[in-house]
Amino acid sequence: MHPTSESGLERQSVPNAEQFSRRWRPALMAFFLRRVRNPTDAEDLTQEVFVRMLNLTEDRPSDAYVFQIAQNLLIDRSRKHLVRERYRHGVAADAGRELDDFDPHRLVEGRDQLAKIVGALGEMPERTRTIFVLYRVENMRQETIANAFGISSSAVKQHVAKAMALLARKMRDDR
Image (tube, rainbow, N blue to C red):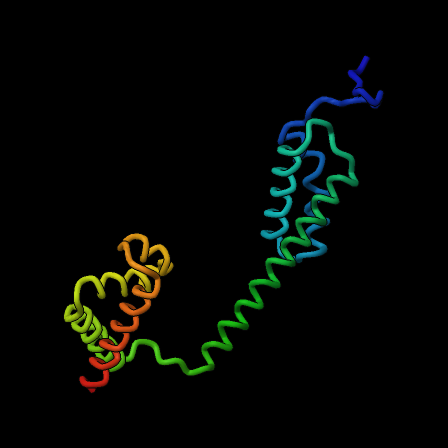
């Protein structure tokens, strides 16, 4: 007598990997080869069906269930292929925009500007510099900074405005 489930349907023993392979490998390989036309891809997809079947079920699966898994794998593969193609086309389009990579002159100019900014920050009063860095670099809210320093939000705005004016003047004067 075979064990039965709650619904009264007959349950069969749990198949192992070797039984899955003997039963399903030829049919799945043929199924995938007709669709992907690459033996390596067909083998990979067949193995993925086995992994999913062994992980998902305790009962012996029906033919329809096995081939539904196989079909879903093909759909997933197709979607991944589409995403990769879109990415490749996007990269190719970006390459056509003639972006200069690492122009040494641009790098030196950027470093010089950064040094000017750091120098200007060093010339600011400490409180103004700290408030500016917290607001512009650390993205803290003005109310939070005001509470931390025991000042009003409008005082924080004044410090930030003062710092911006000093930075603008320094960058303009050093041109």
